[in-house]
Structures are given as structure tokens and as C-alpha cells.
Length: 324
Image (tube, rainbow, N blue to C red; front, side):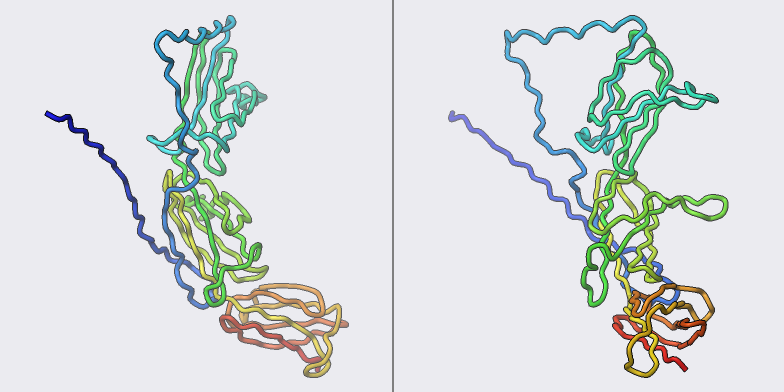
């Protein structure tokens, strides 16, 4: 019989359908499309290809590790994103503390390392190890005895979040015009969330522990704000897109319609209910505002001049306040 060889090639295809979450916009803001989320396998995992060479027969074995000094122990640390994930090879920060070794029984800092797999020789004792990967982190207490050789594996259950903002006509917001604050889903006794990250920029991957997060997206320097919840999955990258409904207004105080703007004018832009939205000083301040109705107050030389305006989504207008 002729020998037959069967070569089998296996391939996997994972399709992740986009999902939608609802954004809670500012009260005056026109309804905006909900953020679009999709999860993909990101660049969060270390590159594949790391191999371990198996010595050929007859190859001398590696020399045995030197014995530990008296009273010492050896601790090796590794971290993975998920239970069955690859070892994280970069971006880690390890901090080691002696438990109750500081004043008042607080942990005492011992050392830190950015190595992916640090191996530390330590005196026997109780320690606290903190592993951080971006904003994802994990803390563990360890008790080491003299002569111990311990390998600790940290499963961070971490994923990534990349945020994008759209503005008028579905165009992507210019770099630096939109900033994101990330809050935990948990609330304290007063109903407040814990801020995880402030001022994150669009397009940047933020590493987070898996869970639900509240995202606050601010376009400009006033009240063009969106709020929404997103879910981050371990070992995956969640991409969230928020669509801002905004208007852009330039303000000028003039003696007559179409006249020159008066310098050193103090501006207060408020809602009809009196809530201050933005304060500024100048001849021609420009602000990005949520669509809605506003009361504009311009103060010059001790006098205050007032005008009511209504802005629509995608408006780009110049608002003149007349000296009367």
C-alpha cells in the first residue's frame, strides 16, 4: 500500500457584532446617535512567537541555581490578561511593599520593577505585591519563608477601551478638541462615582480591568457633554464612538449692528434658568455649546447688556450684543 499523508489546516474566524449603548446627553443637547461599540482582539496581548528551545540529546544541562542566602526567599512574578491568556511582556509596573512595615502598621515600600517577569530575592516576611498594567491593576498579599522559591501568576482580567468622537455631519472631531473622563460603575454613599481617568484623548487605548464604566465626553470648554456606559471585556478591545450635537458661537459687543467688537468685555453665558454655562473675557470669544436657549450677558465699563439666543445643532454663528 502507498502511504498516505493528510495535512490538516485549522483556521478560526471570530466575528464580533457591533453593539449599541445609549448615551445620556446634556439636558439642552439635541438627541445624538448612541455610541457604537465593537470588541476585537487588540494589541493588548504580547506578540506571539516567543519560543523555548529544547536542548538536544547530549546537550549539557543548565547549571543549577545558586543556593539562597540564609534567611532569604526568591519570588518570581508574572501577569496575564485572562486565565488562558499569554504572559504580558511589556507595560507592567510591579510595586512591592513590606506588609505593616511602615509607621502605624502601614505597608512600607521595598522596591519596584518594570520587568515583565521580575525575580526578586527577599528576606522572609509578609509582603504586598501590586501589579499595574495601565489603569488595570491587582494587589495580593504574600507570606515568604526562608528558603522559599515562589512563582506568583497574576490574572489581571484586563481589557482595552478606545474612544472616538464625532461632530457635525458625522466627521471625526479634531485631535485635542474632545476629552474623556472615565468613572467606575460603583457609587459611594452619596451616589458619586470614582474617577478612574481624567482627560483621556480620542484614539488612545486605555487599559482597564474588565467591568462597566461611565464615560463623560466633553467637546470644547463649555457644556457640549455626553455621558454613556460602556462594558470592557477581559482580553478584548472595546471601541466606543460618541456623536456630539454642538453649535459654535462667537460673541461680540458692538455699538451698532456690524460694528467693531469692544475690547475687554466680560461675558457670562447662562441657561434661561440662570445656570452659568461659560464665563470669559475678550472682544471675540468663541465657544462650543450644546444646542439650546441661552441668556448672554456682556459687561463693559460697568454696564451690563443682555441678549437671549437659541442655537441649533451644527450652527456656526456670530452673536452681536448691542450697547443700548
